[in-house]
Amino acid sequence: MYLNYFGLSDNPFSIAPNPDYLYMSPRHKEALAHLTFGLRESGGFVMLTGEVGTGKTTVSRKLLQQLPDNTQVAMILNPTLSALELLATVCDELGIDYDTSKSSLKYFTDCLLAKLAQNHQAGLNTVLLIDEAQHLMPEVLEQLRLLTNLETNREKLLKVVLIGQPELQQLLKRNELRQLAQRITARYHLLPLTAPEVSAYIAHRLSVANGDISIFSPSALRAVHRITGGIPRVINLLCDRALTLSFTRQHSVVRKRIFLAGAQQILGEDVVAQRLEGRQKWWLSLAFVSAVVIGVMIGRTHV
Image (cartoon, rainbow, N blue to C red; front, side):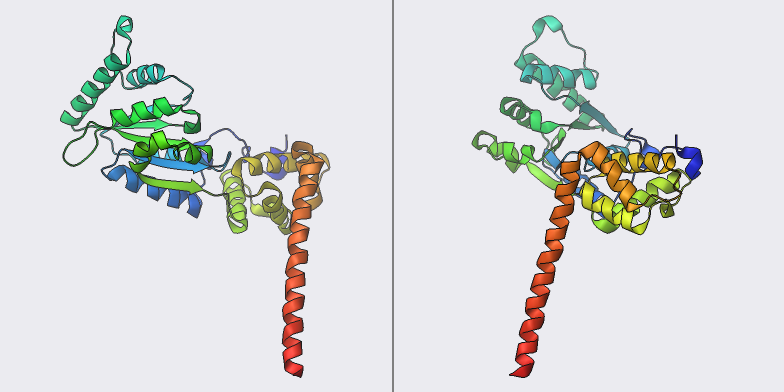
């Protein structure tokens, strides 16, 4: 609705996973480097965690793009499965033919181990990527650990990438999963974007749509970080609404008050007020500390 008005060729803040809008902040690049290093090591697991909307899927997609051509990838996007269902799904992902009348943990495990050995003989690496891994049951994680037991003198024949919310970290602290936790060769917790990264993120997405960051006023950009906390998915939602409101009111630039109005519509007035209040308390605390420091310095000069 606002594209022509702002001279944009596409919706820059759609939450659809369009690879053209992929933005790798320094934090995302660091996360990618950790995972890439971990997959090159001899261990069986690497792990990426982060709050909802921080860009874990972005990092995982980039990771898959960078894997060598001689890699076969199995992806599990819905891990709320039993151990038997998970093994059957991995068999499906790896193109393994199996007899449904013989469904048992041992049968599926034997099928997978045979496939891993076959891939290794053919010079293929095998990677299993599991999204939303915080939903995995402990017995399923233990079954995955057993799958990674197959190894050569130098490396595991199956590498597992676990991607999930912070609850995954707590899950792996359970005593019965300590052996699996010890096999994680790389782990990274993805934090939200900083204020400069938020501006760079918005500028990148606008430039892909043939736009310019000057569409947002400086005060509006500061408010974006304050209200969204640097969460990319929330940034997209609120910036899209702010552009819509600016268009309906025929404003050529997104002002701070328009952005806040859009944020209230999506997040609720109480949430926005709470985040603004938190910022004000921070400034008051800083002012108080500064006043105390200045007072002490003045006192010393008079002594």
